Amino acid sequence: MIAKVTVMASDPKKADQRLAREALAAGNPTGWFEPLYVAAETGDAVVPWDRGAPNAELVSWLEEHPGSGRQALVVGSGFGNDAEAVAAAGYATTAFDVAPTAIEATRRRFPESEVDYVVADLLAPPEEWRRAFDLVVEIITVQSMPRDVRAAALASLSGFIAPGGVAIVGSVAEENNDMTTWSGPPWPLNQAEIESIARDGVQLTRLDRTRDGDRWWAEFKMS
Image (cartoon, rainbow, N blue to C red; front, side):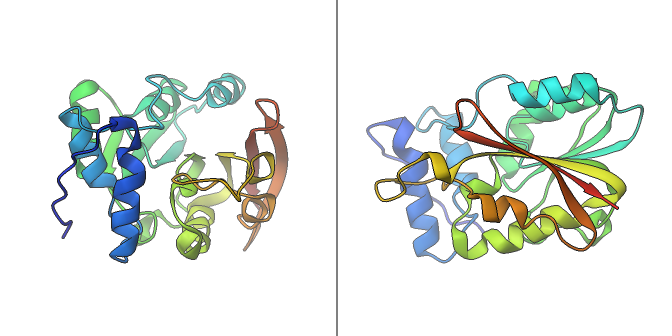
C-alpha cells in the first residue's frame, strides 16, 4: 500500500526530491513515484525526466534497428514517449511503470496505442518476463533508485534479455559530475554499474559517453 502524501512544495520542480527523501526514510525506495505522478496531475509537482518527446539517442538507434514484430520491453515508461517510439519502429512493445497514475495518464494520452502498458516493479518483475524480450530499453530509470537497491534493479534488467536479444541503457554519467555536492534524485550511474549488466551470458557490446560526456549510452547482447 502506498502512503498518502500531501504535496505542498513552493517549487513544484523540487517536489521529487522531497518525496524521494520521505519514501527512502520510510524504507520504500520506489514509493515516491506514485505520489509524484499524483501531484503532477494537479500541478503540484513536475516529473523531471519527462521531456514530452522520446530520447534522442533512442530515436537514432531505432532508425538503424527496426523491430519487424520482435518483442520489446521499455523499463520505467513514464508518460510513454520512449515506448511509443519503440512501437512505431515495429516492435511488439510492452512498457511498465511502478506508478499506476503514470500508466493511467499514458493510456489517456495514447488511447489508440498498440503498446501494452502495465504496472510492474523493476525490483520484483513478473517471472514470465525473464529472458523474454528481444529488445530491452532502460533510459534514466535505474538512476532514480538509491545505491542500496540498484544492484537488484540492474540484475532484473539483465534478466529480461532473451537469447540473441539486446538491451540499450542510457543514464547520466557519475564521472561527469561532482557527487560531493550532488543532491538526488537522480543519482547518476558510474561505469562499473553500467558494466555490471553484463552477466549470465549478457555481453557489453558498446559503451559511449554522449552529450559532451554527460550521459552513458550502453548496448548489451545476450548470447
